[in-house]
Image (cartoon, rainbow, N blue to C red; front, side, top):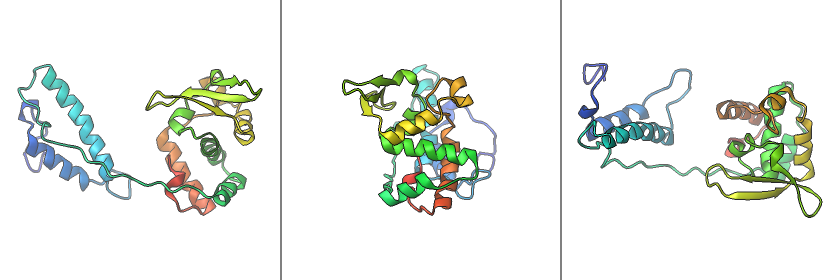
Length: 207
C-alpha cells in the first residue's frame, strides 16, 4: 500500500476487485519473517478468505454499497498425503528420542495412527470420551470437529498404552484432557524434527 497507493491505510469503500487481485499477488511473493520460503497457495487463499469475512460483514451492515469480493473466487490446491508403511510406523514407535517434547509428539501422532482420529479431535478428548463397550473393551466415543459426525472407535492395545502413559502427566491433569496437548503449529514443527531423525521423507508425518 505504501509503495503503490502511497498510503498506510484506506477506507473500506475504496476496496475493489483490483485491490484484491493486487493483494493476492503481494501475498504470493511475500516471505513471512523467520520462514525460509514464501507462503503456499492455500495459505494465501486462507488469508484472503479472512479479509473477505470482514468485508462481507461490512457489506451486510451497509457500511459499504457493494461487495468487492463478488467476482473473486478462491482456488485451493489438493495435497496428497503419503501413508506410512508398517515398517516406517514401527521405526517411529521404537525410536528413542532424547527430548521429552519429541517423545510426546511422537506418541500423539502414533495414537492418531491407531485410532484414525485427527490431531484436532485428539486434543479435545477427555476421560468422558472413553466408554466401556458391549464387548467389554474400552472405546472412544467422540465427534469429528469438522463434520460433527459421531464416531465410535475401539481402543487397540497400543493406543490404550499411550493414553495410560499420560494419565498422570501434569499437563493432562491441568487441562483435563486425555493427552498433553500442544498447538498445531508446534506439532508440525516437532513432527518435522521427528521425521528427519527417523529418516521419513513422506508428507504423512504432518498434521
